[in-house]
Amino acid sequence: MKLKGEVFIGVDIGTGGVRAIAFNSKLEQLSSSYQEHTTISSREDQAEQNPHEIYSNLISCLKDVSQPYKKIMGIGFSSMLHSIMGVDEKGNPLTPLYPFTDNQGKNKIKRIKEELPTFYKKTGCPPHPMYPAVQILWLKEEKPDIFKKIKKFLSIKSFILQKLTGDLVEDSCIASGSGLLNIHKLSWDEEILNFLSLSKKNFPRVVQATEKLTIKSVSGLNNLRGVPVYPGAGDGMLCHLASGGLKEGYLSSTVGTSGALRIATHKPFLNEKESIWCYHFYKNWWVSGGAIHNGGITLRWFRDRLCREEAEKAKKEGMDIYELFDKWAGEVSPGAKDLIFLPFLAGERSPNWNPRMRACFVGLGLHHGKKEIIRSIMEGVMCRMRAVMELLKPSLPEKVEIRASGGYTKSRLWLQIQANLFKNVIKVLQEVEAASLGAAIIAMFAQGRLNSLEGFEPKIKEVITPDEEEVKLYARVYKKHIDLYRRLEGYFSGG
Image 1 (cartoon, rainbow, N blue to C red):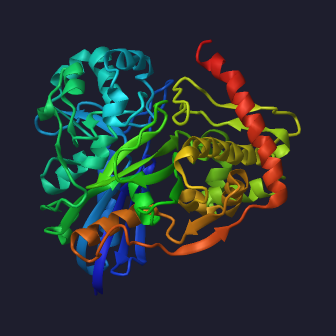
Image 2: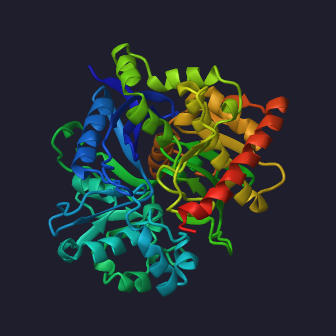
């Protein structure tokens, strides 16, 4: 027997996996499903994914969360903000999916800067290999035979929406995260497309987050045929929405695979140093901020490369390996016994946008073990988030409210490290998976069930306050971290 009541589903197609969450009309979570997918990184700078695997995971998740309910009102979509793939005239992939962690186009940045000097001012995207514009240039010049066969370039979201609904669209947020959209005109930029030997016909139609689509007959999803679907936005923007961030003086903090700090504005907000990104969100809202490449992916790397036995044992015992990591790190004093981690496993985004930067453990000795390494990883990631905070400070009011979401909020220790490093109170959202919540909010708003996006106010689970003694200690840790970065930056840049 199917359960009654109106249900809205929020889907998040992330870098590491697909998640679908069913919410009731009060935006309370009813059920969820998650499927992890694989990233191929067999050589330096490579990060490639299988779009068919991701689509299969999506079908599985949607089937899981929708089956118990009689009345699915609508489905909103979130996805990783930066991804690109080439398809033929029938929509079949000719390339892997390149997520934002792919760094293979790093040698193309110089050309972008020289030949497209207004790239940042027009797109809001600092020149960096994570952007699809750069990845397309890399494909054009390094794989010309494949490039010539490509009829359209799609994000993972536009690929999936076409398979579900038959409509080929790209929401304005994902489009603006490509480095191909003029964020002032909200249209594909002709100068950049010409530079890439492409035109608007090679890309989906740009639509708003609330554009109504409809699920067609899809194998495995017969119960969802005819259900309205809304493109939504990028995961970070929807996390910001779910944080209640469409107000002045609010900063959203998210750490999932990567990490970011964001503010919302009524017009594009850029800076002279080209170190802040700016993407369109919805109608008269833009979101600006800074992001780190290496957030939770650092702990996933540690799990997969250095803790396989422990991970397998935890899985057999039904335990979350990350809970074990948290326990281990909590047994180590702040500062990780003077072990410093620079978390640049996949290069750097904000604040210095150096794709050649690489990770280092500094001060590693015989007295350090896995527990100290995990603690240093957590501290290193949060030091990079602090560096992003320093970048945004000139644009923030004296008193700013920071609201946290994402996988890292499952770790009170990580949140406490952030509060101490930021010297700021951190308010933790009750809903950990804010991107899925934000997607469901879009679906409800599109159907007139919410009066405004600005008025949404999330439930706060916990308030983390800084520890005065640890604030002093972490001030020294951060100073060391920045000093080491400056000393090593030239080495990794070839200087």
